[in-house]
Image (cartoon, rainbow over all chains, first blue to last red):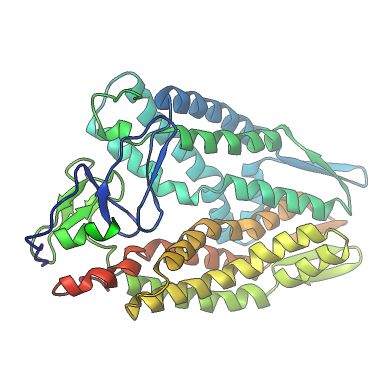
Length: 211
Length: 217
């Protein structure tokens, strides 16, 4: 459908910018360095130091925090001597029974299901990589991580909890449960884990050195 | 230095959006190619990018109206029943003295969805007109739209916690109103609209002169 022009030549070690399609040479990056597109400034590649160990450690931490965040109550309220506490899944259930099923489903997917799916799939990628077993299946898992990522919104959920608690603090005493703090830590750990992972580990074998 | 380079499309190459692998585009329009390295389906440009984006923008505009006019929250207490829209919720926060929070909610729930719709209209229209102006600025605008979209979910989560906690039968209860469904739909639809827009369409007009026919829309 497109006739490549005969006189055009590829740059050495070519990489195409995913935002403007410019072909350019992928530079060799020192650990911690980032490469940006010459034309539009999009991030092209990173070389996170010590990637595999760090992202595995952080992801395992996130898994523990995730369990705490879902078992224990998130927030509570004391009003006229009566006290209520809710976990995330209870909040979704109450919303569902209240007649706004689509909203309940949206909250369930974005605050609970997709974050846990992302975490599990990420572990399924990291553990075999760490054990030195690279297989084509890892790419499939990683694609799931990628497609689920934009819809996991734990950090927005935390801000939402804060806003609602401020609203309620005028009427009653608000309580912060263990899951609230676990969620707050989870956000930091998840961000660090995503930053620590060097995607090139999946596509380049044997695993490259840090230089 | 930039002038010495070309786009992947000019050389008949496609790049994988997951792993970045370059592959030669096959001849024939309906040929499906998978990435030779990671197996992801590859396209020169996102398929039917502009028409999908337009369709989702229109859906978002239609949903934005009930999301703002219908009640988001219904509070029943000893003093009677009260219905709150997104805007009256902001006003309540402002009047009760928590103006930083009122600003956050106003920005995330009212301004972000609106600005996002306007930005997507501008991006889709300028790409469709094959504009060659403000390329870097438009790319930055696209990144901003992608980054900021998720924060509009804020009000949905606020409602979730309020409804879950305030269930003191006979004292006070809070129910989610129909606007919550419409508002959630606005957030989801605008996120899909941003995802379906291909930022490379912003840059394609620069290199189109060298090609016989651009293959998008």
